[in-house]
Length: 499
Ligand SMILES: *Cc1c(COP(=O)(O)O)cnc(C)c1O
Image (cartoon, rainbow, N blue to C red; front, side, top):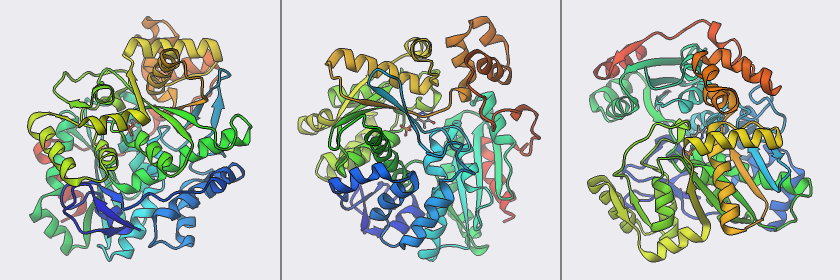
């Protein structure tokens, strides 16, 4: 199977090149030329398969240049009990009201980014080998928190790679910062940037496109690549857990073969929920994809009106990984829903860039609404969903998942749809201990203690164990102390690589 660009001005390429390049040369995103359809027997059969077997069968549909043995190797190297603390990898929990929670945070960094970033390094290094890339791949990442740590864990000590992560010195939580500056591994580098996330991101983009630097790198056998969510290699592994959640419900008899279910997804860059859309197109019986946004509700407005308007205030919320106004992966959805009309996509993206807004035609809007339903929840409704869910069901939500739960409750009362629904849970509640403590304990306590003390208080209060990788994080040795100004980022990269 070949991959084409959503902008239509790049030749089709194989999966390996699409993954190695990350973004198409014409500025578009790579998408598979067709979406494989799985037959009903295969989808039902997943009920008796392991997560690894489900992953293998789905990945192989999209990776023609990879042998079955290679796919098997990638999947088993990524999804195993050294990396994940639950044998089911992505377990489904019943709340008891006909709704379920899909826990995507059992990987090494306790956020759903691990689901893709544990396997991407294996896919990428094989892709580089198959396409004759440089002898060493340098992964550059700008992060607002979760992606950086997940990428570091994914690429640590992977032969043929080095990873350099830039994070905004004042823009991440205590736990997130500590997770990164204590990172182990011979090939990992973490650099704090004085500035905000946009500064770090702009700096990384400049380094990527710096011809002089990339020439110097080439002569030393280095080549840059990207681990952010526009890379097809990050999207593909996410399709698996939608099939896996459905299979788990089949297995316990919660749904019948072919019975359609809903997924409620806390959404930022539109990567997670887009994988759900692909699963639906591949034949998974999905009724509605419930898109949950926080106060940065640009996508909710889009689903309701067909107008994408980023000209609005940017809010810092208790669900920081969803604080995004430009959802890059929406471009891939629009490509499918317009019947792959690259010209129309290019025009909309141009309007977004120039005017900050575009409006899709009525036909496309109707097709969006056929699959998606959306609402948003602010900080207070999200925190009260944490409290309510804990007191009703004894289940602890993180603030991102709480946004999805709050929106799902509204969906159910607004539409009366009682279909089985899976709320996709994207982070361990302990990763955001301060806001979870604000929801459950009193504000005074939550605001005055440091996040590491709050981990223990939460554990005491709920009986839920503190994840081992977060426990003791405050006493782990700091291994990364570089702090640079925005204009020093390129020099930092050159120094790290010795070029
Ligand atoms: C990244 C992230 C999200 C948003 O996912 P998208 O794929 O960007 O829509 C939601 N919750 C958490 C905890 C995340 O880390």
